[in-house]
Length: 261
Image (cartoon, rainbow, N blue to C red; front, top):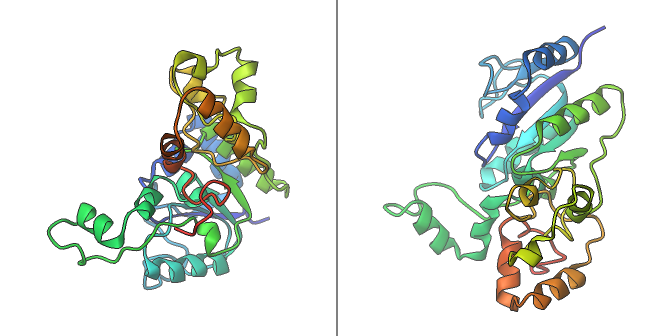
């Protein structure tokens, strides 16, 4: 019986999530390659699946495509759709693919502003447009949230896919994990946190290590934004300060920013 064909692709990103997917123990790596056939993965191999298309990707069909990165160029859309056509299952790998990621901060600037910031000597030399999540262009079958992803969660999703289950990620807020770890609320420490509306699954990593939740795993399915705003106001954040906290990772969230940016 042939092993499932798996491929990794990237768009606008740091490729850190792909590195996390490789950050396995030798035993885990051997177990992984014993059950899947990795046919494309630029971070780990030079081979491609089949003949190359005009973007340098293979052309053969694949069972699972892990896609990292947001879409920042109009020309990327055609490539993204070709990957969708080749793949039986598409997984958004990390915050950039899932919710736009830090790349989408530029969406709050004018095109002239972000072009000059990125390419000061020749702002219009390269193609660039607003940053969007891959799910705004194609059907996404599963997501692995986070910036970067959690390696353990990556393995969990792979196992679910191999047995034909739809991968499930937590749909309750980070606050739950903080309480389970008996963390003191960072609001009481003079910090501000998006844990009340952000999807858990990270083990409350940032609040547990002296930081606060930035929202990198995206919103839970039914976020109580009004309650989050009430909490922030209780701790003396004005509206502009509140929105600035949401901007880092949640720019594409209509619940927070209803205008299409």
